[in-house]
Image (cartoon, rainbow, N blue to C red):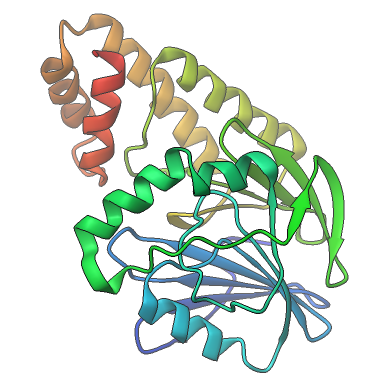
Amino acid sequence: MNKSTFTTVRLDKAVVALYDFGGIKLHAYQTNDPISDEVFVVEKAGKAVVIEPPCFFDNCRELAAYLKDLTVEGVLVAYHGAGASFLPSVPKYATQNAAEYSANGGGKALIDSFTVAFGESFDPSVHQITNVLKAGPVTIGGIDFIVHPTAEAFDVEIPEINAVYTHMLGHDCHSIVAGTGHADGIIAQLKEYQAKGFDLILTSHYTPEDLKDAQTKIDYLETLKVIAAASADAESFKAAVQARYPAYSGGNYLDMTAGFFFP
């Protein structure tokens, strides 16, 4: 499936890219919220599973209304634990470390920060996990997934559409890279995706991407390491990266990356 082969559905706030694989569909719900969240819905035989809930109240309402004709069997809560007003009666699935990340860890710190930054539009309530996931295959609503725990939460493969969900990619925007070791870890992960030949890479903050985008990101990360090795401090590093990638978005992420490379 080509990443551009979809039907566009325009809602009041969000835009949905609908991919039709025949017996199964993927709804990529682009929230248009202040942090560019993306929510994915896998639909099969009238049932659906949501990957990552929205976290702004208007999106929570809008997406719930969009899904009203489907039976939502579960919500996978990985890196985005806020937005508990979204489908409160539907089972919530997460690994134990992802639940801890959202309730007390780094995810909770982000939720607290977003609450201050965005005020009443942001839903800070954290989803209560009803079903704890373990590594490996799991079937929810007749749809097969493969869970891969990560340091903070979990990624998930969707074999029937030859896709994988992870937190971030973004082939033409900056990412949070916590130093050389982290860059190498991301590169290894993306090379694994290439080896497996996924058609789509789904992420929380970007529209669906593909393996060409993965290679673009690998090249970017390798360049970051070279620039960091040649830079004297955070400011010179940032200036060099901006000069190399002048059209990239996500300047706030580059600020954080510079802080990691030059603490």
